[in-house]
Length: 192
Image: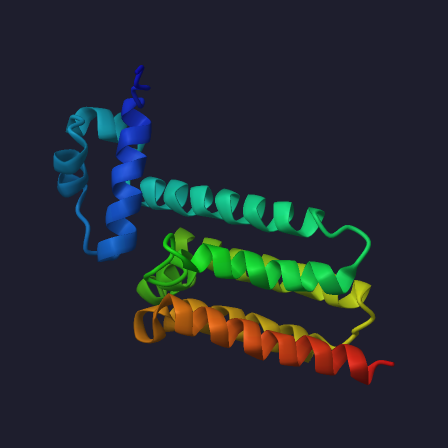
């Protein structure tokens, strides 16, 4: 069986991603990333001149992964905005297990970096704004013109991510599905 050897850059990113997510971004030192990855400090700084560069790459990788996941789910239900809204919820539930057992990496970054000018803070806000825009777009396609309703959906999704450590995956998934089903069914019935 052939094994694929990861590049030094990818090993560094994989180790940093795991550590940032499990232990928190601020608490993980560059020395620890070097130690755990088995890559030299010179190589680390050649690929990521600063810790912020590594943090940005970490968040951008998550951003790419999540949007790809959502886009695949939405695409499967072309022609039905209601089904696409449910697809976003189901895709979120899939992300909750086992990948994001410690919450959303973007919400975690917001909590760790309250400084508005920090790139992690900005990327986390951008991600949440994009999620809100996508929910708004799908809602409008379904005939809902109420932005406060979109905000409710976003709050429930973010609440599910935040609740996994407390309620576990099953509890968070069940509540996310139950609450969003009620919101979607009620709002779509109200517009008829």
